[in-house]
Image (cartoon, rainbow over all chains, first blue to last red):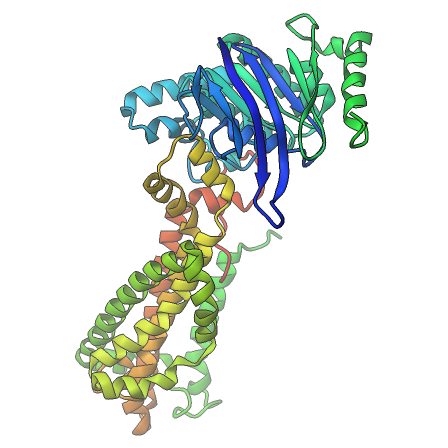
Amino acid sequence: MSAIEVERLSHVYAGAEGGVPALEDISLKVEAGKFVVIVGPSGCGKTSLLMMLAGLRHQTTGTILCDGRPITDPDPSRVGVVFQEASLFPWLSALDNTEFPLALRGDPREERRRRAEAMLNLVGLQGFGARFPHELSGGMKQRVSIARGLVQDPPVLLMDEPFAALDEQTRMTMGHELLRIWSQTRKTVVFITHSLTEAVYLADEVLVMSPRPGRIVDRITIDLPRPRTYEMMATDTFGKLRERIWQQIRKPEGAH
Amino acid sequence: MRRPSPAAVRWLLLAALLLLWELVPQTGLLPELFLPPLSKTLKVLWLDRVEYATNLLVTLHEVVIAMLIACGAGILVGALVGGIAVLRNLMLPVFSSLYAVPIVILYPIFTAWFGIGSESKIAFAGLYGFFPVMLSTAAGIRTIDPQYLLAARSMGATIPQQITRVIIPASIPTVLTGLRLGGALTIIGVVVSEMLTASAGIGYLVTRYRTILDSAHVFAGILMILLLSILFDLLARWVERRTLVWQTAGRRGPSTATDTTTLPAPAPV
């Protein structure tokens, strides 16, 4: 069974003259445990799509199934979300931030503490639980976000350009770290990015979206072996995959 | 030479000011009617300590109740106005304009309604302090990063959980700023109204002694108000610092330092 199944999803923003079409006839399947990356030009609606997968926004038509059941509202037991930035609560320590989803559902204190600490260890932040977000670097903050996204152990992790605000070196490290965490937890990941290199480096499959109204115009299987290494980025295969995505994105509208 | 710390400089300035207060009238640079020496002021304060203490109690009582009203109503109305778009669009421009009106012109009406006792002072000062509390609460709630709420919803937060766990902690810094400002205005409101029409209170004492040209007693009253305001400000800052460790330190930028020995004071209003 697919972890995520999207069927004929379309979305129209309310507005004058019937509204603005944002997403058009999107269907996709993500097998459990796969790492899928969505790329596309700015404003193509990829973040909207992710918000719908998270149950944070409602599509106009179409259905989203996660673990075989429809997603209509946020369900942190099935879907964890990692946002771009600024979504850690600055008034809570790293540990309290990580515990937050467990506190919401009223888990006993001991239990959630233990679980949150385990997650911080998983993302490489042991000993940093007492720090406040402002005392952490950009990369560390995103590690906490990932820990928070995983703390309820959902089968699916959605990531909306999580490393976009990081400098390139940190970004590379974080990509590598994410693959390590992913291989340890075997989550299904849907990851949005602007970076083609990041897309090829991380993904099992890359979905390319068109400019608005967003459609999926290409699906590219990335058959580079795992574990991925930095050296692979210099190979021909890597370059060709990257080039193919770029060709799809740069196509002018209507040329698909 | 090592540069003296700002705190040391501040204490030195204060000491110098107090010294001048003593010396300038002593040496005859200013007549005692304009500025009685510090020692004489303290002396009358001590001699008439019962009178000053009873009146200080009246003033304190008015200030405390007025602050409770200003803060309670300010936070309540501010939360409603800041949180509900319809109310915000309807009322915020009105409240903002009202804030600019010198509310003291209403005080004569208040004495007509509530008499010249404590009630009229409480009503006036409460109204005076209400506006900054209300406006900053509204601003605090309105300017919450929507990303926080989105993240909370993604983690399954219900509406009440969003209010208690996100909206309230996120707006506390702005609300506290408003409370500090509102509290200070409440003190001003009480003292000013006591000076205008009253039968008790430190403001009343200052006015009464002024009419009989007793400078030392006037300055003794002023000194008490000064101490009262400073004490309130220290208390407010202490509360802010205690509550906002995460925020005050955050203003230093994205450092990873853990040095918390030199937290800067909150930004001035």
